[in-house]
Length: 223
Length: 250
Image (cartoon, rainbow over all chains, first blue to last red; front, side, top):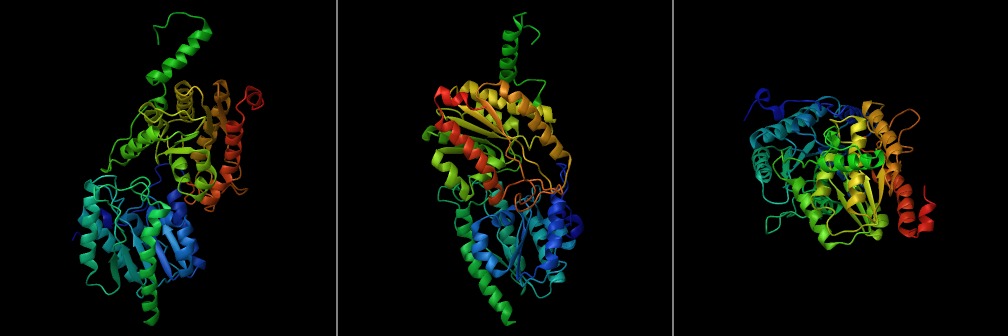
């Protein structure tokens, strides 16, 4: 495995304001101040797949009742999430479970590097929140038809699964309900742009996730 | 352009407009049709375009929405099913699109076999390489293309929204784009400008995540706010087809 220095996916890196409106930092600052007066049991952190989840009914139905916070930022890769969590977003909260969903935006990185980035985040969470359980969600397939990114994402999931298998405080959950059809295609009814989930897509992902989360929270309560 | 003979000024300016949109005005890069390159490796932009071209073969929309993620995301919220589906609306939004990308899509099949009564255009906030004037020129080129390809359509151009949590250069740029559009669009026939941005910037100059969850994209509540003036205008246009009613619209 690459060390932090040689793995860009595992080197904390803030988002760059290329567009000129400072939105990435605004969101980060919001999350830091949000964490000051909330007491979440569950923290969702990651990219647009996390961020968009908050916008749909499914969040209110399934995750608000679990006292969940959402720290998703569209476009984030592992190194951005690593930076955010290292710079205040875990400052004032002690969730029982952290749901981590990131990796699909790590363009230019190999599956090994992306796995290294995810594992660096898992380690950081363990360091900052020793009692928390980290649930890593598998990276979803993308693109209408088979393509190299699907292979990369599948490989990431395989490597992460192996890496967490020996850890008592983390696991990988595959949340793909079978988005890829027998002809290799993905439907826009599930992923409206072959990357982002529709409300229907979220339902299919979140029902099992919710059940799994509830199980984890109950187990954490027993400890 | 230098070979145009001296004609009357009215004919010359019509020709200039026609030539500038046909050739992709070299003076304005925002009016040059351009497909999105597949840099990431999963060809999603082309897949979405191909799907829209197919939808043109199957559907008979009364309303066509075209633009960037502001258009695309709208279809994922309840409001689309409540207010816009009943109008037989098609949604050809693609996240990240600039005026150049929309122009390319419209020239490459997304207007084939359809005759919507209204086309709603919402694009321009992603044109990061271009000046406000160029962006407005790109939007104008889109409106010109629509009115010439779909002679029966009325074009509604939505103003660009403010963005960013605090005042910043992109807010100023989008305001400038809207300002150009306000003065240029009425000169095109069958086209109007609708500003749906009122109320998003609060008195302390901030934008709230309740309206734009990332200070750019709208929440369900944000879409509800813009839907009101938009649906009113669409219904006005769809219901008021006789000449007398049309004359009463600004």
